[in-house]
Image (cartoon, rainbow, N blue to C red):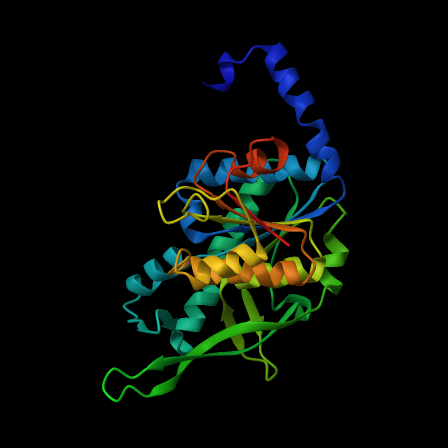
Length: 297
């Protein structure tokens, strides 16, 4: 059904039904992680931007954190820079981190800012480096050497885990009709630029802001059970059990671990939703339906 087919009366009724949801999130901060994969086509990105502006217009304080994995891969390929992977993660050397910063803090960040501003918002594009917002330490991972079967540390290069979030800058923006759009880059103690996983970065920001909700927009419907059916609701205890028994596996494990971390930092609820679904953010926040998996204490 297209918008044109809805009668004015239905439109009014729909708006009226959203009222209790709007009241629940009034003046609250919502952190939305917008994945490189969820961005998809231009019209999807523009629809997302309109939804973010709508949140701001209804007295919600949205903070957008974006990724950019596919865009980084495209640019590295275009420049002929080969990436090495270890333990499933890209090793980010000095040449790569330059490109990562250029793509994340440059093209992807400013594209989202442009779409939000075009939709009538006032977006401000930043990275975790601005105002010393996010300090990170170098990520270390271990992997089992296939030959010797000995566990050894893997140096992932310029990749970091958030350690400290300073809210000075964000507090100047939130609640003043400005929409922060954050690229997941941080600085190490010795001033190096570190690339941070966007989910992890969003979790750290949401935790520091004690956000009402953290929405992780991804390219899957949410957390699925063994029979591939969506699980609408999970407590931290349930989530840990499903990781232990292998129901939650692969790339969903770090996502769910980020959710648990954010909840432990004071976020009220974290939702994993399919960002490619039209108006996913509005469906989640303003209707009874909800769309993905809500993880809560």
